[in-house]
Image (cartoon, rainbow, N blue to C red):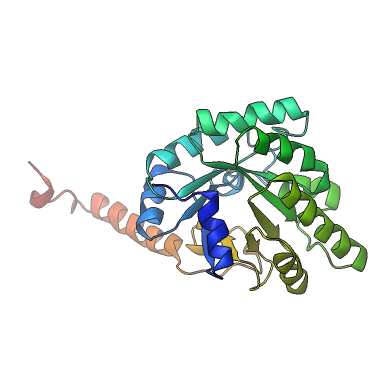
Length: 264
């Protein structure tokens, strides 16, 4: 039985932290579920760490459905959240509902994530009323980088803190069952977490959230184009992969592979 929204709400009530990780393919989804993760986000961050774009904006709905489907196929217990890409929900409520339903019908996801504050409240309410579980996302919203001028910490002024707290309460009231808080001051994340009844998942938002999320390729050391301040690197798999690949190449060039052991 897969993890469901009530399971995460119960974790908050019991003060049990929630570990979330982004996943984009079958192989890593298998590994992540074996590691015991209860929640996986198929993030539009794949635009950067998988596709090589400068930001998440070029990612399409079809690409998100493709990656969500193969992650879901690899898992049995984890909650799979599909990330609604840029312009998949901004055009209209109808377009938002149509695309969100694709994540459940085609991608076989269990929930969707949508970026934005009060401007997305009507869409969150519509999806919730249509039986689509919704994760909200406020603070730094990567799809808005052209408007806000890059990847900057949000909520530093008293006015912006007040607005983000209001946004959080409005999104909870609209039906979101969980909320990502990205790149906001730790004290603001603490206030929001204590002010709403749904779990908060932090990324660059300090230790007071109900859970944390990181990009898989960041924490494993696979993506090194840049390293955000909030990332803790738990491995350096790029170095391990480079070493293995160089050894294989050298073995082929020296005639050491395949040996009799690897031959029929």
